[in-house]
Image (cartoon, rainbow, N blue to C red):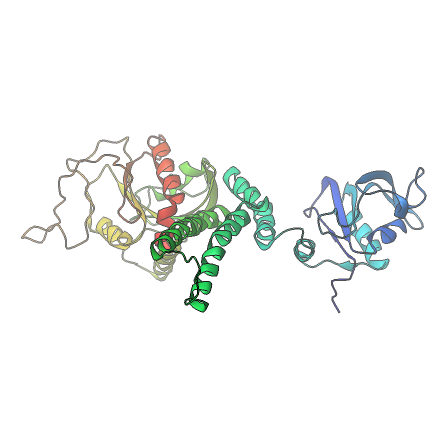
Length: 413
């Protein structure tokens, strides 16, 4: 039966070969347990040495398993708040597992996922927000994600929450006194002062909640779907943003039959790009399944890049792409700006809107420029060339701006 009194052990470094690997042991029996398998010419008894010291020696029972450095942290001055011993060995998975097995044979239990951090929380070494931040810091893939997780682990979020609580508790006390002793001679807060203070606290609470959307993006990534009719350059744009040939690019329409998902760091923001099959009428089962996955990716995306061929007039399928994007956060991307543009200007509208009396699609004359960033959902137009790289910096800036738009994140939640 699992007990918080158990001494636990686990390999604390990632799987795979490396220069060093660490086995962590935590619990009341951690030091005497390791003392049974650690030998050092300058040290007779591990249980008598002070905390926060390192010692060179070997792990052995009958034969030597490895040369190691053992580091001791005595309670309560350790990560878990318990006695902790860290064994730094050579980073061979076989060797590390052999040392871990020795620890388990001597009485330790294999630690469960996150159990060291759980004990740190239970022993008052950190609060829940800090415990969550440990996992975020481990998974951080960009500098912004790392900085956000580190700030939370250092207690910045907890300090904000405690500050808000400290401002509300006196108000609650005054209200309760006013309700219970309304007929007595007390100095009660005026309704105006109470309302003003509550509104100020509410504003700060909303600010904290708004930042949750950005935190989620830094933790899980900003999901961007690349949408468009066949042969407008979706896969070429994916390759250009990744700066590698990840997707197959050919002049044959319908080359991309399935969604292709790749992650990239754009200005410190972890972005998950999804290249999709072109939106058009399916001619066979394979195309139909690809288009179904395209629509699923569109529904799951935080942002859609709607791609159009800037060297050709818009056709009906382009307007179907616009229809799919309206009502969701999106950016209009005019690709192939290195080629001569047709004699028209681009203005997004739904199919059925902007038609002349004969039923033909009429494109309204609106200059094709990079307009100031609007609120999410209204759409921004960006001109790029996936072939030459022209306009990619502006597109990346637009994507990261929308990813970090805290008010937009709150409104979309």
